[in-house]
Length: 309
Image (cartoon, rainbow, N blue to C red; front, side, top):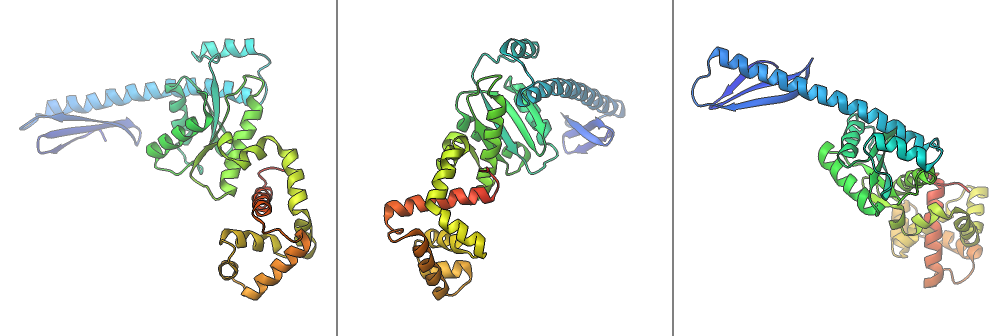
C-alpha cells in the first residue's frame, strides 16, 4: 500500500484508507521511472483513494436517509401520499411512478447492504436493511422481472447465491407494509419449496403465490383435502403424509418410495392402505391426485411457517 510496484512496462501504486485498499493507479511507461515520478504516482493513488472515500461517505450518508424513508414506509409510519412525496422529492426519488418491492435473503453477506444501497441509488430507488434481509423499492411494474434482475446483479457483483422475491406494483404509501410481508413470505416459500438461490415474484409462484394473498381460502382447502390425514399423523405420530408425498414425487412407485424413505416396500403399501381408509377410494384418480399434491405442498409450507392459519 502506497508504494510503487513495477512489472515490465507497467508501474502501479495502490491507495486506501488504513489497511483497506480503495484503488490502484497503473501507469504504462517503457523504461525506468525516476524516484520523484514514482512519488508522484503514489500521491496520485492517495488522492484518488481520498476522493473515492469521500464519495463513499456521501453515498452512505444519503443511503441512510433513503433507508430511513423506506423503513418508515414498511412500518406504516408515512401518514399520507403528500408527506411521502415531500420526503421522496428531497431525495430525487419520483414515487408517482410505479414501483415494486424486492426482498433479498443474502445469507448474511457483509457487503450486501452496501451493494443494495448503490444499486438503489443508481436506479433512483430506496434500500433498507431489515434483520437478515435487504429490502429495495425500485421503479418498475413487473415484480418478477425486477426480482430476477436484482438476483442476477447481486450474484455477479458479490458471487453469492441470494434468494430474491418481489411484490407489486405497490400502492404507496398504504400498501407498502403488505407488499413487504408478501415478498418476505415469498422468500420463505422459495426456501420451503427447495428453491434456494432463485428469484420469483409473488404472482409467478403459481399456487404458492395464491396462498400468500388468499390464506383463509387455502386453509379451508387444505383441511377439506388432507384434514383427516393431518389429524391422524398428529395424534399417532405417524408419517402417512410424508409417505404420500414421496409416493407422488417418485411417479407413484412403491419401490422408489421405499428407497427414498429408507423403509420396506411392504411398509409403504400398508401406509397407502391407511391413506385410502382416511381419504377414501379414488384418491389416485388424476383430478383428485392433483388436488392432494397441491394440498401436500401447502402443508409443507405451513410446516415451514411460511404462513399460519
